Each structure stands twice: as C-alpha cells, then as structure tokens.
Amino acid sequence: LYGQSIALGLFMGGLAIGSKIIASHLPKARFPGRWYAVLEGLIGLFGMASIFLLPLCEKLEGLHPLPDPWIAFLTACLFILPPTIFMGGTFPALFKTLESRGPSASRSLSHLSSLYTINTLGALAGIAFVNYYGIPSLGMKNTLLLSALLNFAIFLLCWIFVKTPSRAADK
Image 1 (cartoon, rainbow, N blue to C red):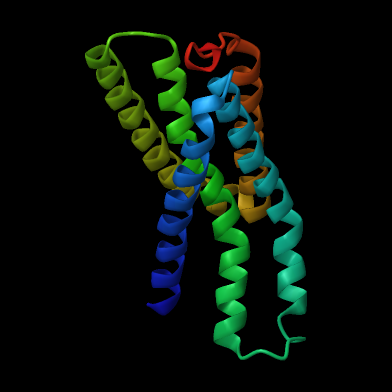
Image 2: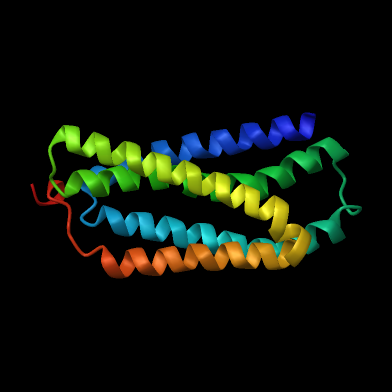
C-alpha cells in the first residue's frame, strides 16, 4: 500500500512539476511542437536507460547504509520522477503548438479537448498492452525497449513534421 501511494504521488507530482516548468518556458518558444518532440525523445531515452538501470539497482540492493524504506523511496524517485516530469511538459507543449497555429479560441479548445481525449485513451491502451501482453509475453526488458522505440518514433515524426514557427515568438 505504501509503495503504491509513493508511486502514485511521485507520478502525479512529476506531471505537475513538468507542466509548470515547461509551460513557463513555452511563451518564448519559436517551435513549440519541437519542444513536444524533444520531451517525447527524453521519455524514450529514459525508458532505454531504465533497461540498464533496473538490473544495477537489483545488484546494489544489499549494499546500502540506509534503511529499506528510504532505498525504496529513492529508487522510486529515480525511476518515476524524470520521465513523468517530461510527460507533464507534453500537454503544455501540445497546447502551445495548437495555439501557435492561430485558430479561434473556441476551435482551439475543441482541438485541445480532442488531444486530451486521444492522449488519455493512448495511455489506457498502453497500460492494457503492457499489463496483458507486453510484460507477460515480451518480458520487462523488451517491453521497455518497445516503449522507448515508440517514443523515439514520435520524436522523429514530430521533429520532421513540425516546421511552423510560433506566431507568439515573432511578436
């Protein structure tokens, strides 16, 4: 129960931190869609690094001076906070990208709600895939690898196709 509470708290906290940090830098961004691309790439990079960090953490488990709850907390911080901070920044980057295209406010809100819906459904599909197919069939390492590769693919697609500068950055 404590582990789940810590994981959920770190996840939600990381999303909030990322949203605040990225949103504060976006008003000056010339290509906000590229910020989104970079964040997706960083999420993939961290997923790839996790493949190598998880076994290292297991080996170091018995070689620490801190009590077990502290090690569990610090390990959770290491694995949960960085990618969730990047994830938290993706939504402000998407919103700024949409806003920079110059549609009316009502149209922007309609598109924003569609983006949020698609993002939420994608997260649910990812959770279902990982729990019911990925880890049971592919194992943890290959599931992490597949997830990282998907993030890299999103990074490349967004980097290539987002070429329109923000109108706000030109003012």
